[in-house]
Length: 367
Image (cartoon, rainbow, N blue to C red; front, side, top):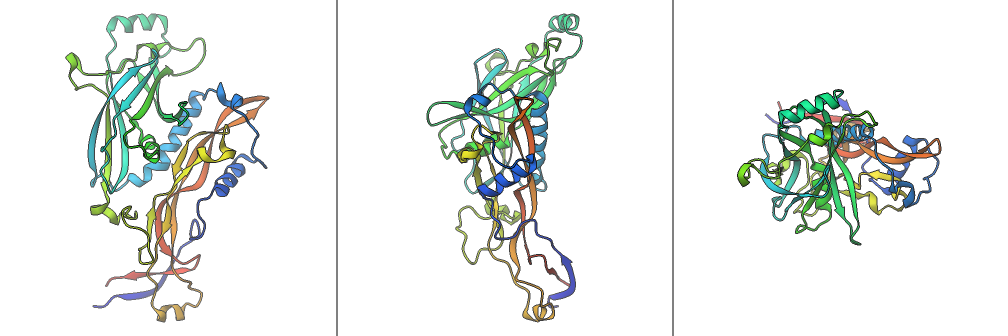
């Protein structure tokens, strides 16, 4: 039996028109609107050089970050390729360690990174140390572990960007996991496949203040397993999707150029916030983000249907589902600078669909 075009319709309200691209002006306008500002604050490097992001601000940013890029992973977990990369710790301070991963040829060609997970093995604390801690700091047994991406700039200077943060208990041991998908995305945008991925791991107090617990001093992560084995060494899990086999997920084929015959799909587009002059010394996190864009063409309804519905315009490839982008900015309050989390709506394209611009769109039914 032949396919039928039903007269029932579904109203589709696009989140962004096909011609509305992610531009520097759009990002700036959204940021100013969310902060209720008329213009960009004038800042220099001294305004942010000694600025410390409080734990509650980091936690808020990380929670929003997980939510913003967690959605695309749904439905893909049964079709992932999995690779595990061993890393090594380079100790710089007692509470800060630099973790180095060689990434050369670790990500398969023609693949999409679905998730990157850092696994660290927390060593058990000796019972004697736990008893001493209970006497001296009975208020809390928790510390906060923060993972940052370390970028080495062309001039040799370094800058870190917050990736994940979570509390850990000194009374527990074993593997702890951190979502470092954003860090690997940032590393990919550098287009330097021979350079390693650098992650900085900080172990800090769970709460600030002079009376805060000193539990962070007892948290240790293994650099290698017992007797030199690899059992407990840091691991980076890379979950990827083979676009040659699972390209129907809605993403464009990165190996094929977009042409007039390309069907509607989601194409990768990286926005470099560091390269925007107005963001310098004002936007603290992130250094950039994968925004994606909708490209390609859509199948048009038959002429008989368009004549019956004269208001029905051509179907175009648009963003039908988006996600917010969390950012940390430097704001002035009471004459002092402080970090603040802002969520910018509709910054990441999650899904592209074919629809008419605000008009009723017919649904095709296979009888």
